[in-house]
Amino acid sequence: MTDPVNRPMTAPTSDIPMSTETDPRWTAVCATGDILPDTGVCALVDGVHVAIFHVAARQQFLAIDNVDPKSRASVLSRGLVGSLGDRVVVASPLYKNHFDLHSGECLEAPEHSVRAHRVRVHEDRVLVALA
Image (cartoon, rainbow, N blue to C red; front, top):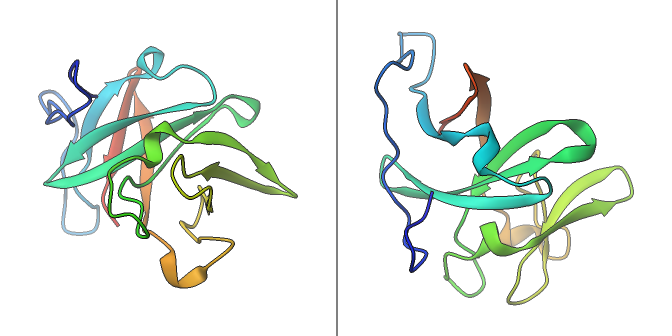
């Protein structure tokens, strides 16, 4: 979620299953309807800028770090969602590098890869667990 000037907002966590010793901590970031198909939003999860995307063709929600490693700007959630071959990707709005939304791999420059985070939906809420 972002406020009117696109700063990440801290996600609420009430009534959401939290961590156990074998399960990572899950943070609710928004309602499923808050992310339009084939777009992304930015949320601050435990101090990390995370980009969460709704991939309509696969009815999936996927998350990666939001900071573009090349520019160091928190912009990946604003990128274009698409596919290259069988990979679901987002194109950085600044340098147009493509990031695989499943793995975080930067296809043009693997040294600029980002982390991919776990995502699940619980009672119409999108939850993220940091990698």
